[in-house]
Amino acid sequence: MEYFKEDYLTLSYNESLNLVTAVWDMKFVKADLFKKGALAGLELLAQKQATAYLIDTSQMGVLSLELQRWIQLQIEVYTTKMNLRYVATVVGKDVFNKVAAKNIQNHAEKKQEEAGKTVITEFFQNRIDAIHWISGLNIHKAA
Image (cartoon, rainbow, N blue to C red; front, side, top):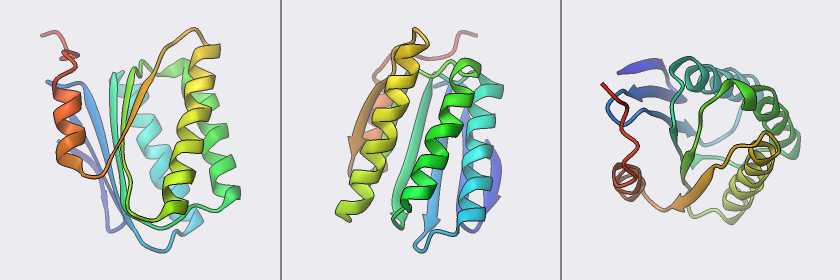
């Protein structure tokens, strides 16, 4: 079910997989739109207590260092509000995009560990492989 739909981002929630999916479509990253979308994703993760997050950044431009730091700070704020255990990130071919995604994920994992939580992160080149990985984790929400 879609929860947030804009030209630059679609956020959805799959109850059976307890999965929030963020599909970004922003070749040229606009800070205000990125912040609005990223906060909406974090809010949905906290609201649904999702255990898995699939982030597709394959159609997203490179985040500035300022935006990377900003999202890292937001992750710190939301760490205690979330039940996140698995993150699948789809990255494009741009090497800078990959480095930014890995830096953000490494920071998020560190903050989760500090909060006594373990988050397993995997990177993929397409959404199908990411969904296949999540589907095989046996993290389905109890009925």
